[in-house]
Length: 214
Image (cartoon, rainbow, N blue to C red; front, side):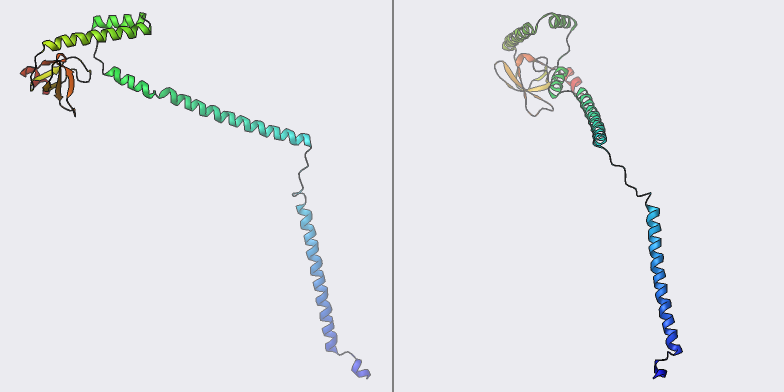
């Protein structure tokens, strides 16, 4: 019975190995814990939290951010308005473009009429200028009618436009139809004949026509 309870060399060796393995595992756990503690201690200074701000400090920082934001907005608004103002200054209104084009179609004034025009536009108020323009226009219409009653034209006559609608003045065409004081003149480049007083045109000689169409 005593022989059965006696440990063999093999049993002792197995026990020693188990004890050694347990000690190794314990040492490994201890080493890992120490390494983790060291790592935490190393990182601690870098990961320290920022100091908490007081309510007054928070309000001051917020006010500073609001002021910077407002300043940026003001600068953007001023730049945008300056750009729009520059664009408006360089852009001519549509109605002024029409007025300019109408002025370009006007017949040039002679020296005497230019002096009268400058004097009238300088010294007369807008109401009297408008009345004067109407009187001159009516006078021209009366004289054109009187001349038209005396003008004799026939269909097919080559004529030069000398007065009337400024779009046609100076152009050469051919009379397509004659009425009592009006006539229709076919002008090259126009889709429809021009409607004019017969006094607005004069017969064009062969020499003048050839020069105009050359």
